[in-house]
Amino acid sequence: MAQVMEFKLPDLGEGLTEAEIVRWLVAVGDVVAVDQPVVEVETAKAMVEVPCPYGGVVTARFGEEGTELPVGAPLITVAVGAGAGDAAGAGAVQEPEESGSGNVLVGYGTDHSRTARRRRVRPASAAPAPAPAAPAAVAAPAALPVRPAGPVPVISPLVRKLARDNGIDLRALTGSGPDGLILRADVEAALRAPAAVPAAAAAAPATAAAAPAGAERIPLKGLRGAVADKLSRSRREIPDATCWVDADATELMAARAAMNAAGGPKVSVLALLARICTAALARYPELNSTVDLAANEIVRLPSVHLGFAAQTERGLVVPVVRDAHERNAESLTAEFARLTELARTGKLAPSDLTGGTFTLNNYGVFGVDGSTPIINHPEAAMLGVGRITPKPWVHRGELAVRQVVQLSFTFDHRVCDGGTAGGFLRYVADCVENPAVLLRTL
Picture (cartoon, rainbow, N blue to C red):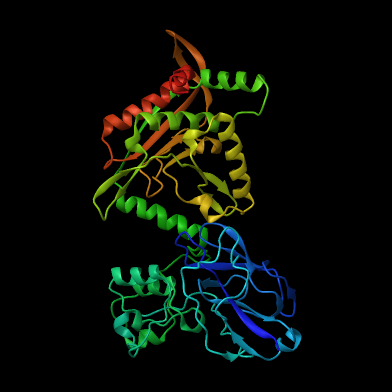
């Protein structure tokens, strides 16, 4: 007799608590193999295909495309073993103590630190509750009845912390997730609700703030929501300051042209700027750091994991080049190209987008000269690079047309003062104007 196994959305790692179903790769009745991808989901960090650790016949799918599910919510059920075809219509959903391949997500393995537990048996024919198209409007805690004593239907520690930090009673909320699960959107809706809602108003549909006719509303969720949260947190927590300088990049461009003319893999301008950054951070290590607010300490980091801003169809992402300080210009060029291609195709793993210690932002590709970058929290600094363009410049006492670039440097004023920031930026500018300066550190 076949067993009907329930496969739940696995822990995606990196603090992610939910994912949106982008595309189902299997249908009910399909036969799947162990570790076959069954659904493509979008997290706040990347698009990933989720493989199922069971082989058999798909008996149910949970959630339509576009539905956002929390980690731990059911994805599919699979009839495993003899009589799998019969079990597709009737059977019991069960989760064994040890089963499956263990490869619950591309790039991740099974978390064996958790103790497996047997689920209660339930009829497989019970249809899952349809997920709402958008989180239901939640009234303020004072206007809702308090739940009776018992477990609160919320599995995300981040949701619990958000509620706790803002004084929200989770027992007063009605979850919009599967089986009434309380999601982050439910807590945020409660925060936006007024302190008290009259009964007549509570019965009426919730209306948004007045907007012109024809205005379009775009939900801040997924990647866009994650970017908004991170930038807002950076502005709230980091007392940043920005300094900038114009530099003559003519010699840097000439050096790159000579390197590429010598044969071998081509070297990009971004790779040369990255190499300059790692050399500058070796001189000013306080800028390769983070602030631990809980311990009230500045933590200087031993390795440079260099993030670089990449614009994609999904929005702005910041892939990270690991141990950039140990790479030469050719290695940096290759890694930039590899990560950029993964970003454009939406195949970056969450681990490719986290752990950065310093960010290089080349906004010159958009044809602009300058900017005031927002620090990529929890880092301490970011270097922005404008376009390299011909401009009048005084060179050796005479007016000439030179290749000029504006460099903008935003830093966390808690980790250093202006003298350190100015020294870092001046060293970067000196290397851009005279690449031979780098020879001292190569």
